[in-house]
Image (cartoon, rainbow over all chains, first blue to last red; front, side, top):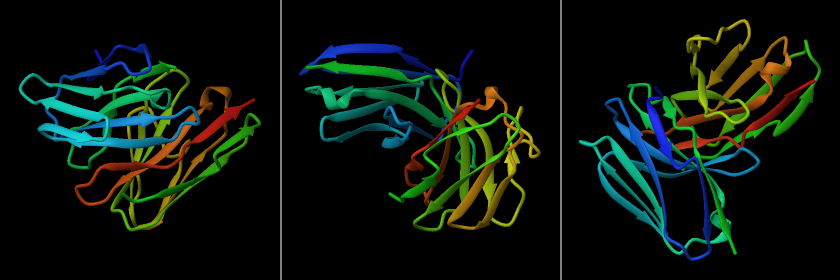
Length: 109
Length: 113
């Protein structure tokens, strides 16, 4: 069983829709990261969370430490949001990351 | 957030050769991480690189295959040695600064033929 599980694996939405991507993990963590990967392979950090909720523009990330669960929400989705979204957790003092398998999001115009 | 310049961005290499990937950070970072992403898979940690000491490798990865250098706090290299088609992957370097978010290089897309 993977330590980090993401769902859904693939998601297609119409422009303007509200999108939710879920992440569950099975270990104690010090922080959870939401990352965005574009087709070329480069990765951008969206959020780092250890509790509560963070918002940046149309993106919102929440985490429930007791339930070991996090969600990434995208409001008013746009085709430029199309990418792979990856959940990753930090569990060690060295801060290395353990990654989920990613969610391929496609937003259609 | 810090910026990592990673190169090459992609390469096609012959079986049996070696490729060195470089990552240059625009500020000092204590630890850098090297990850591999095989086609259709999630990222997997290869090793953690500290300045002035040998890298710490994860299970399944060995120094002879993936030698790493970390000569200072802003630079690291990963070499993929004696390559085979199974080494075709995206390789990424990453770091943190203080307690901040992780930042990543642009990735190296390697194809071994």
